[in-house]
Length: 91
Picture 1 (cartoon, rainbow, N blue to C red):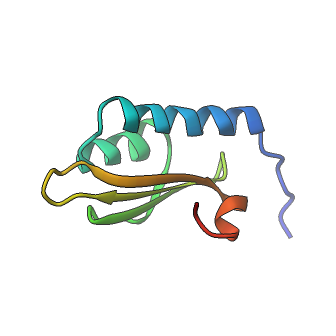
Picture 2 (cartoon, helix red, strand yellow):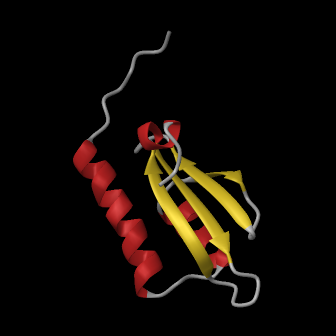
């Protein structure tokens, strides 16, 4: 069994805050979401569809669920969740 690496909770919370700020300040298009999460922040797409996408980052143990509005091309809603929170379901 692989050794469990402890998660830096401060870094995890900082990453969650960065994602929330990005979505709140200027709602990104899905291409911008892909660039941000997949490029700059080191997330990997579990589901990579503009209508509904799920991204994960194992280093910070985070999921980002994104639902894009087809009329505007910007997020209708999104959720940032830790792996622990996701086990009990998204908020």
